[in-house]
Image 1: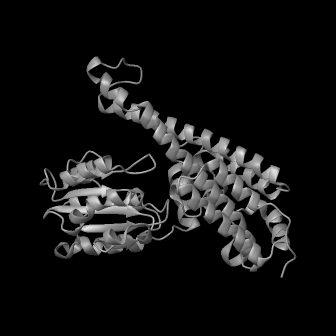
Image 2 (image 1 turned 30 degrees about the horizontal axis):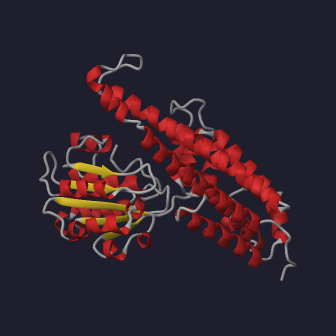
Length: 394
């Protein structure tokens, strides 16, 4: 099994990287790997790092590959964040690491999973290093798009853009990971895999979430049904309250699950069973895993991620209306297939201009949310803008 096998729908990008690996003298030392959220850009970057260190180009079985993929390779440093942004001190430490010679592999590799989450002041710390890396250093920067990164960084990197995985590709991935014979209980059915892939719209992480947390599919549908029933501004305010409560609950669940995994990994790495008492020498380090301040920042980031997902859900509803109005159901399909009748009914009430206005309203809400606007006010304003009456169609 090679390091590339777990990636979904990225055959073209993988082929480009394999060409680079086959001609190492032409290897760029600074990369910007771009892909829509959930496309697997960070996983592809890690696979590339493993292939760079591997003597066989990423066979997935050698000690170098295994160490990189497990996060234990001494020459591969990964900077990611579970909070809203990446702090400048973390970047400075990474820059200091980049000047060191490799210990075990051929390269010192620095991977930043969310370079778009840096403030301009923080990004400036990277400029010189990305422009003139040390002789044995490679930078792998990941972002949703080249446009989401400052031009000063973008111009210094080779840009690799990922595809959005198709629904069949995502569905096949889900069935291999969670379907019959995978060990996942209860195993995912074909219809559940197809539904999760369709609702996720090419987002691998979200598809996995829907496949393993069916209650999230239910809450998603309930929110869209309430959206379709909006009549008054007071309905919009109540729905905003519902969305924020669900987002808080799902974010808390996500943070708690990650905290449990960190604790389990710490115990496993130190040879401790689930019920064994933590030795005094490890207690301080164990408590550092989940400091209250860190958990609070994690909760804030997780809540914003859930709210962004709900914005995608709302946008998908009006996207479907546009597909119906264009007579393109057979070509483009519907995301919200279970709401087909309601979508068709809405398409008869809205003009094409109103559909576009509603999609623009969602993107305005996203910008306000990303700009640290109050989630309560952002969603109240958005949902109020989506309330009827409808104007006569043009």
